[in-house]
Length: 551
Image (cartoon, rainbow, N blue to C red; front, side, top):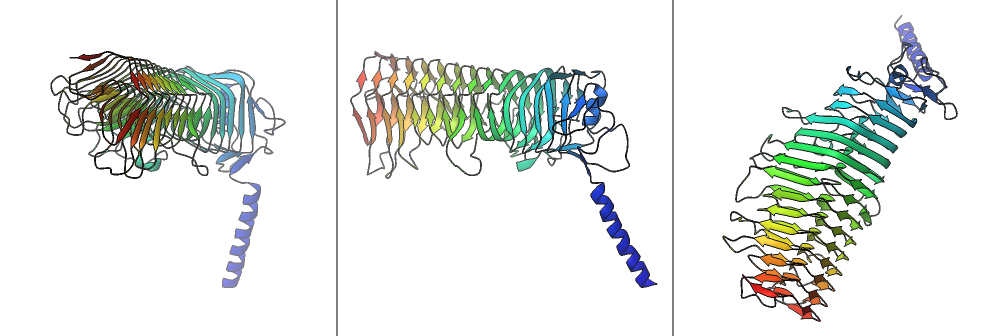
């Protein structure tokens, strides 16, 4: 009897396995689904979608229950044949099916009236292309529009406009959800977390509000891939909250909260305003990407940002007023550490922030070359450590960059972590790992560092300080300043200070530079038209034609 039971059990297992082969969890194109306007779901004959009811089938809300627990559409094609208008007074339901190796072609049609609290349009999205589709008049709370996560796909020719997106994590205690890679919450207007996905010609023009902590972008919260032709506009308003001691640094970007990959030929026009609590918090805020860019697997060099523009104003406010600054960095292109090159990028948005680590027109810290970049936005720091037109901390060469708008930093209290300095191009050149050159750069605007009480803040037309070590040195070559320079510490047309008295070998070089701007000094500086203080430094072929005026 026992033997019969075992044989019968084995037979049932085999039978169930055979049935599973013919009724998989995925819905394939060959299995024609009732309810679509037409088509069979194949590449040559995609399912046609012309109504809200048919779009809901795409979301997995099947008209006919075949009795099986499906999880995904697989290798299935869809097209929109008409505009889809949802009833905006009703919340959408949760998506029931994911998309794997599928394609949705909107054919230029519009989906409007999506209203949701916590539910995106689609579930899991893998190896799927979404293209030629517009979304408008949506009202989303605590959810991105498309999906929480998209892996290894392609998004192209997508427009998301005239919509509201809000995230409120004020009372969130659980920091573990499906978009919580890297121990941070990631949120985006379109998608929270995008991995290995190509993004082309996506336009987002929305009003986005944020309350809490995390990594936020009007397009994606976190993006790992390559993007080109992105445009963002509208407004992004964030209120960063204090949740716990030593909480993670929040990241806010007009396009991406954080990026690992490249962005090319993209423009941000969104106005960004961020309020910080009267607590010690950290935040990276920028027009393109809040946190910096790191190389993808493989090639470790190359442009991370190419022909990108920030044209939106960025304003940061806080009631914090302390000798210790907040760990806050703000920039036009990318605020965090960037491991890769930045080329032909520009900022024209006005940027202001108080009690922060740094504000820059392009980026704060660059471990890559910066070439042919420009700033024409007014940059203002209050009790900020470093303010510059292009980059605050440069580990590699900066070439052919221009600042043409006023740079100002002012101090109201003594800061034990450094003065409040300002520079037209670079604040600090770090030659710890290699020789670094600043070449063919121009400052055409006023640079001011105000500290009337302690006379400690310095201003420079090109560079505040160029460093050196026993192994490596820095060079400033063929640079010019025509702007008025005024510092309550040091003031100089080209370089404020150069060299290190402890270095026994090697010399920094300042050569073929010209100053024609007025220099306001407090007296006692050496050659302030070119360099205020120099040690182990060779200065040659430089000319000062600007007036030196003692305050």
